[in-house]
Image: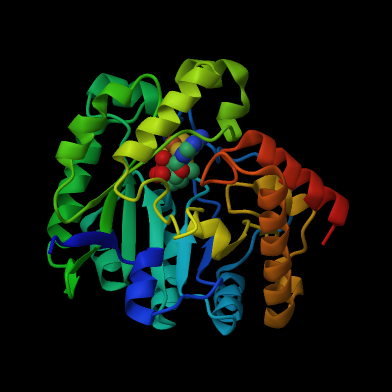
Length: 342
Ligand SMILES: C[S@@+](CC[C@H](N)C(=O)[O-])C[C@H]1O[C@@H](n2cnc3c(N)ncnc32)[C@H](O)[C@@H]1O
Ligand code: SF4
């Protein structure tokens, strides 16, 4: 039988290790970390369409971890803001607290500000890393990231590969890995997919995603530059489905919806709850603050939000496994949140 590869913290991993999985697996937290890049695509560039309240303290972030653990959460997801390796002092105590509570952390990063001690910390604290790698051509990398130095990133990839060399595990016929590459596909890099796949080793997952129309890509000129027209977007979506090891987003579930949404909850840097995931920062306008809810209240809200999402899916259908990537669906979802004021 062929060995199946999955990443530690994926829905498949939880099914394999825990049997039937609940609807409450992931909790995503945004952190106010800086970033030295200026990617044309950046979905989380800082501003978010609402006034942001007081930033959460580390103690409050840990209080949130305790709250979400009570409702069965098993994984902390860090997708932004900014670059977590550049804001290591912010994420470190929360990742450590997550590991102490037997959470897996899934962190998205360029690795730009990595050093050996950071790498060892991630290795020791059960962190699965998704490394953004949109090109292996230094000029293209610089252009897509607004100045990123590919040579520097390649050196840091070597560091993390060396530190993570013993992290793959085998469970039966399954290989569990703790590193992956994440490519955001665009017109400029679509012909590089095979090259980046070949760069990925047997100990790493390869995930390809089409862009989301959020953050800097809400600007039409930027969207047209990276994506083109509707036909261009369809092509990118199809290529991503075809080439991604998971068949789509990193956390795709059996229902073929992104698990960070369907099995997840999220909060922003000020504690506002976000839905369907931590990219949807504007949704914080219409949702309560996680610090004001008990774990039971938070669970009830999460259940309501998921029922709402599935009702909308049944009524309108959805053209993407990512509720944010189907623009019409996403706008309808935001409108309903605004009307409901949950
Ligand atoms: C917002 S970034 C933050 C973490 C880190 N700075 C990085 O770029 O990996 C989190 C993930 O979102 C992806 N991303 C950013 N903007 C996107 C967009 N408009 N559409 C799809 N993915 C995007 C990045 O490639 C990365 O994998
Ligand atoms: S996508 Fe990541 S690396 Fe690029 S600008 Fe945004 S936060 Fe920085």
